[in-house]
Image: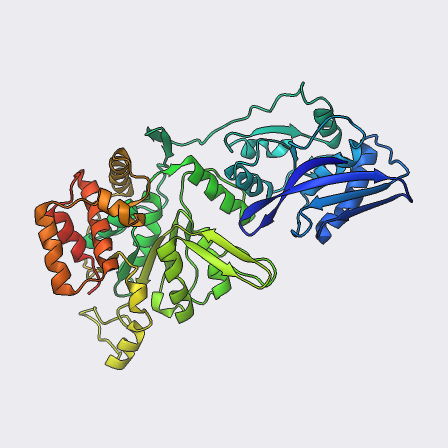
Length: 502
């Protein structure tokens, strides 16, 4: 019996699959066992044609391929190459059990690229399972960006057979291209950032309070809610936050590329964080993921390490808003179905935008509000207190004035975010301020005596919850980082308090 390794997807993670083969006496046949999908069973014809084109003669034996573990559903054309190799090399004395082989076969024996390969191999590498793999030559450019893995690119099946017959003589392809972007290093970790600003804050005139709040939210990854009249700039600010977010470590860049590949988009490998903006009519399954047989990733999972923007927040269904509380708190989303239970990472910056009332004119001095008190109350009651308690920064937009002028550009704001990021990382902090746990808050969010006195007074006067207290401390920590202060001062606490929900 011979064995080589491959993998399949289960949820967001790759699962290791051993491809085993035996050729036994009996009527000539070719079968694949082990809960193989229709796409794998169809591959038998591709494999037969590719082997014949590669000068292989089928022996008059019973060929059985087993995909182990047998209780795991397998899917995808990436099994073609490993199945063909196990048949062709069954009589070769060499051991292939430590090798991985991925690729779809053409009828002429060519090894073709598959978009699903990148997220599959990245997941295996993150699990420290993958060390060396035979892959399509056309995929080398993107796959070589995965660190600590040896990739051997092949153009056809015959070349792959030669690799495994002469394992000692072959060398991995050296096509490591890295991330083409500016970077800096702190504590042995390299962080990449981009200098392109498709949407610039210079386009936003006035709204200085909201822009300051957006800067703080971006620096510390704090959830933010913008409330204001229609057309005052809420969506403009939200769409520009993406371009001033903190730089990305190599694993974050690779994770973004993995999510792009899962959406069947060509991975860009740019240090630009994702931004997802589902419409308020979106279903639960599209936002959180789901599926009756195979749980698919939703908008919340695709926003991992980036921004999740909900415009017209109160118009989202009550079920969606309440279900959003879990990923906002735990930074992950769990999907439970009869056939599968999947957990996705969901570490995102949430931005919400809403009008002050159903007609939107409540805060506008020049327009009359057409809503009665009951309609306004019913509109605001769509957002529960537990949901709002997970928002770090609340901003009421200012009135639009004809004399409003632009102030800071995205380039200037991004520079402040980078400086705050360097300041935070230099003190040994691993997470963004908004994601600090209780022990890390005690360690990093140190208040001076004046700041502590102000916070104690606020706790007593406003009856703040434990979650609110911690959020105020974390926002104050980000404000102090922007000022380059090691200790949180009175002014930082006062500004953080000014952003709390009233």
